[in-house]
Amino acid sequence: QVQLVESGGGLVQPGDSLRLSCVASGGTINNYAMAWFRQRPGKERSFVAAIGWRGISTASADSVKGRFTISRDNAKNTVYLQMNSLKFEDTANYFCAARLGTSAQQREDQYRYWGQGTQVTVSS
Image 1 (tube, helix red, strand yellow):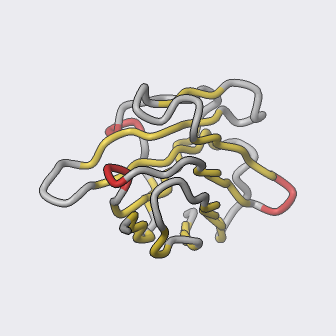
Image 2 (tube, rainbow, N blue to C red):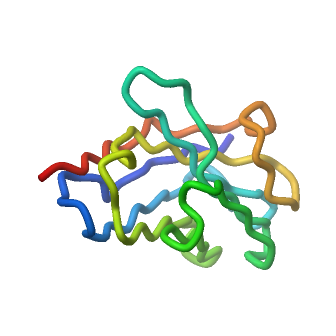
């Protein structure tokens, strides 16, 4: 069973950048598609970005297109979310998720394994 641990969250100002990391243990992520979701205050959890098992196919939410980039390093069992030009509305708890499969999926119910989340707060 894969365990996921996120890190890299913090308090930043609008326009700043952050890179989130998600390290997997208990197995290799080579056969897993990976994704990031987020839960903003008072909102349901929502899709942010996903990446296929080879890192070739990606998908991202319209709200983060052009600002956030998902990537993976299978040798390090790690997935990243590079977040640039952060906005107030990006404030959320960010979760890493994994699904056994090849394609980048956007639906939350497609992902079996979840991390505990890392908090990102954008404030001036």
